[in-house]
Image (cartoon, rainbow, N blue to C red; front, side, top):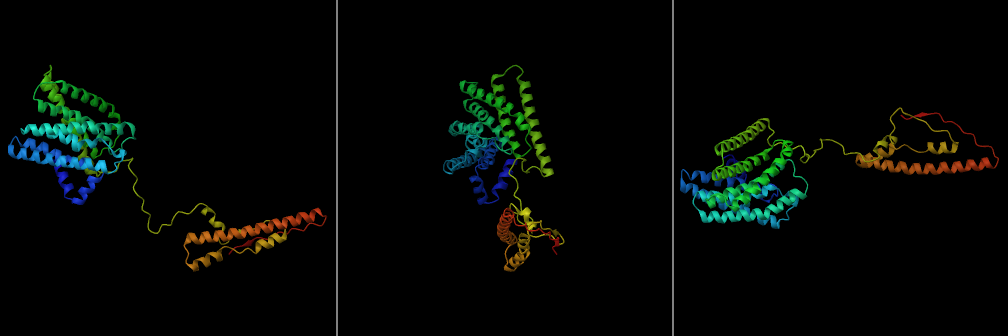
Length: 386
């Protein structure tokens, strides 16, 4: 019932939102979940009103098959990214077909049940190789999607229940083959328990409820048909375990909703985009830490090193960069562009000054080697930049 309400709320957003969800490679498979749930509710309603229950099963099976067919064509022609594949891809066709076989057999539509069983089994064979190849060879699923790995347990469990519903006999070779693969997938789930324990609670944890509940249902079918010693105790223990498990997830969901954490972004999810604060300046380029050289603070002493008087005289003729900045402000240039223009002009003047320094040094060396009296050096007192 909860899934039906969520499906109705999703559909009420309009056809554009629904079509956008169908095109999304991650969310699209979950669109079929409300229709699958409606099939199971229709089969339960058949015990009270057989005609109404049968009609609901047929209608929602058709809806599920249409969604599965549309998504199959979308995945074939849409350039599907292998990294977006996850076990949820079993839901529209594999789970839809096998649940359809179970519910159709309950409303006595055995021919349609067999056809639906075939669609589910063939889809499982085709998609199973694709999904397992992605899980084994590609990078790990995001944290929000890692709980859907539990859906790997659902196809063999659904196939076992559907076979028992169609065969209506004791355990056969096919039932044992399906049961063996179910046990293998159960062992895989046990290995993944440490991975699940590290996850933060999210809506994806509800994938455990469907997969484990149908596995318990298949186990109850085996207990009923084989009737081992202590069968009643096994059945009570299995039903109690799945009831407590689903109740714990429901209670945890209500707690997360009350705290506003149910739809919170996982810790390893994509970072939220940063919006710059109003009036914030862009980051300074490399080298902006030298910007103070062009604009000395007022009152800062600026000393000239001792050297030949022609060099000091040449340096004293270099104007400051402040007039350049004032001129750029009048021309309407941006702050960073004004700074870069001033830096380029000051750099070109420093190159001219370096050339004059080299010429003066060569002249001094030539005078010393010829025996002439070296020119006396004078110290220029510090001047203050106001």
